[in-house]
Image 1: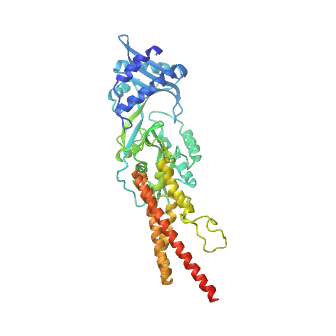
Image 2: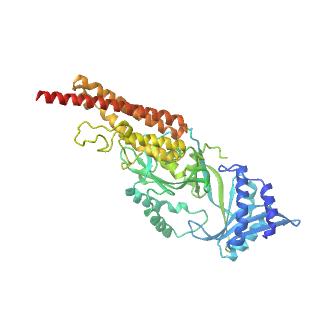
Image 3: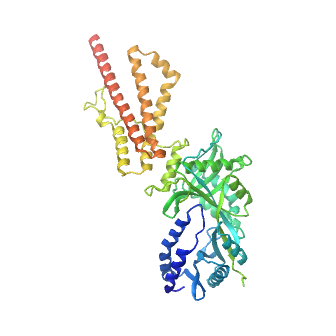
Length: 314
Length: 187
């Protein structure tokens, strides 16, 4: 991509169709893309890990991509190249850009190419599959309005975790963390358990970025499970309020009692009292128990993360 | 725009929204701050520290001034909604506790055993506490209504309750002085 490609890329950015999403209307998505275009183009010359590729059709730019190399997966720590934006009207343009990105990623010794699609982008999803991408994570969401009626359980309640209850979270996360691994990725599970143990031992109960809550039996305060929420704005530092479900788990005392429903409803109640918003989280498609529970509780899939393993690729 | 009814006040950090939501559920931790709205600073009343009938003048009632200023700051936009709620929240539980304490059978029995002229004062005190709590709750309704009318009407109820309390204090002080004078005359 050259500096002189700017006008063509701006033209494509303005004229393309934007996907439907629970988080932003098509108009908002377009505005976000236009707002970020100039900073991204500037970053091409300033940051070595940001790159841009274009595809031509009859000597005119018909497709483009922005990517960021040398990223680390947050869970597996594997080096990967992340596709930040890919605009391609047809499969041949898509394939050309992916091939170019894969070459760059391999040159930089990145093990994976990572790409995101919204569920409304059926063509791009088919093209990604044809290229060998596999779904690694599904982003699910639940919309909550400030007016809806939300039942509460007479026997269980959700409240802030106390410092003395952090060992309970540590114990549970050590059991559950293997299910957090994105699909088709491999990781040293013993190492993963150690890292989560350290992370959760040091989790401040009054942290603003990761808020630990526990589900307890009202009468006895027996700990049944936990959820860690990350309140934020949906578009970085602006837009509506939302809550990312960083982690959720049911303890041994709560197995088989259907308590995940009450954690979900307790979280919905909080979102409602915040004025409404979107609760969302990421689930591996191989974690069928969590995925099934999430969908049964009203969750819907908005987007997915794809991964393409680059080792031994032709 | 997301179809959800979202809070887009750019001044309020999402953490503050969540903190307020956690506080508004009944799941408060034991170490949550609690303030007695009727408790005033010692020595802020009369100039004579030995005066057993000292009373804080209404215009100096610290908690009333604080509640009034909080409402004013909200209107002027110098505090956020969450800060407004955080200032009011600690007053609620102690008031509920005082009302519950007056409602107990033991307390009702004790009040019933008082001289007749003293009993109405306790009824009035009870009603004042209820009005004060209702006023604070109405002010806190602003969280979901966003209607400044709730703040104004709630504050008016709180101020009226403080005014009634002030009159009761005057009456009890007068009663107390009369009783003391009778004792002194008797001795």
